[in-house]
Image (cartoon, rainbow over all chains, first blue to last red; front, side, top):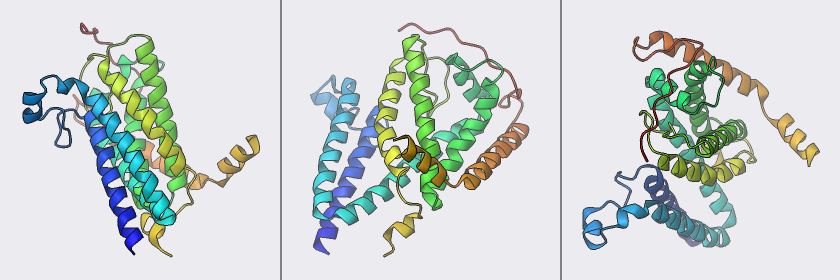
Length: 221
Length: 55
């Protein structure tokens, strides 16, 4: 029991730090970020520039915490990691898709800025893709089809990485279109989105190899 | 390696994938039909490429 509690505590702290990482990199002015706190900026005026560094440091510490959690109780740690990843990645895709589903025109404008797809396909892609994000994100959380949902989400990450790399290589000024719908912006957001997607594709690949079972089924004997 | 990849692909529930994909496409159509005029898009086509702002 004690090793379960210790392992669970380490995993929860790691999950919090991963949330800090995602927030610092993707949502620089949200409740979970530290680099834009007024008290911290008063002491370190330029700290707001280091959100990516803070995010990556949080991720490194999170990974370092997972290692002792795993060594302490391997089976429990794997169950905990799978649960947290399914909730986190599935939830992220659901959240990311809502704005795009609500405003297909706005998302189509963003997709057009990538100048990647043939022009006849942009609008159709903008209509269908967010639905895939939402429903396969939801499937990752509520259905036992983890292999299939993670398989689809893995390829979505591949497509995001290709599209962002394409936009950066061609020096297009775009947002990633991931969580907000705006016009053409600077390319720094594209870099942070690319870093985030490269980080998250690994755990998604791992989930795609897990046995099919619901989140509750993970914890059943 | 190739055999393992093929084995993995075969192990997936393709029925679930195709049904889910068809469901998504259906909902996308319904969403576009129900969206207001300023938020909906033509089925085929694209939008304008905006001017890149200064760095």
